[in-house]
Length: 311
Image 1 (cartoon, rainbow, N blue to C red):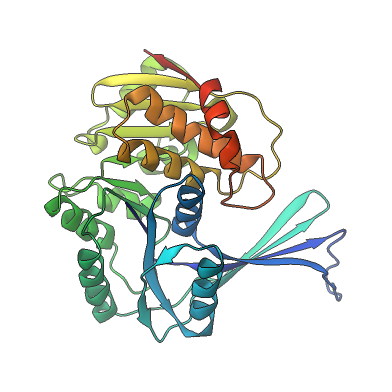
Image 2 (tube, rainbow, N blue to C red; image 1 turned 135 degrees about the horizontal axis):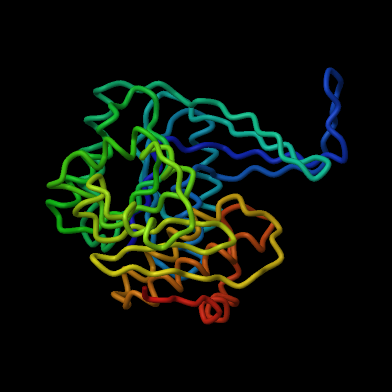
């Protein structure tokens, strides 16, 4: 079973307009509302791929109730810690082949809320095979909260896929006794935390992924968008090539990739299939208009099109 963590969930609202008029009224007929946040995208895709999934995080208020109702509609299991704080709205305005986003920062919780959540997280780990931790840390929680969760998972011998960036990633890598099983930065996120430029030379990539910051992490999967991925597992390096597709909506493809990776890890598949499953899920998400959605019927076919080259 997968436990998918989203500390800063949202109601994702999509507005489709022919034209966005500034300083004027925009009336919208084409709207959608979904349970959002990176971890909930992971959970939805994993659910669609046939995994048994529980979503967790921190929710409160009427918007929190809406998120839970939306998950119930999709028949997705969830066990959130409930507070009195409303989650955030994230608005995407799709107009003239562009996307304008308005993102709220979310609630501000307390250190007591953090303690309660860590206890809640610990109690959910029975029968869990894989944990995913995705996205930003909710306001008010300490920057090392992911590190604390990694420690709890380690005590329970459960691998964790950590998909975050910036300070929350670097802080989570400080405790070498409780590291994630897999991290999935993209190239820009890698540049940000290392503070250096990154070329396409394989020798340079190997040097980067051998950086002392990443010492002890079994899997490092660096997304390169349409170019696939560069990967290190233990001391083995891979380059992953993906087929060209008709991209409809790439948003959420990284989350879908995490879901595919989690599925393969839970199944104890070999390196090649771990990477095939991850990349196939990301591809299928990009082919759909809805964020965090895949057509499971196409999964095996697109996994077969992914090429994994051992370097």
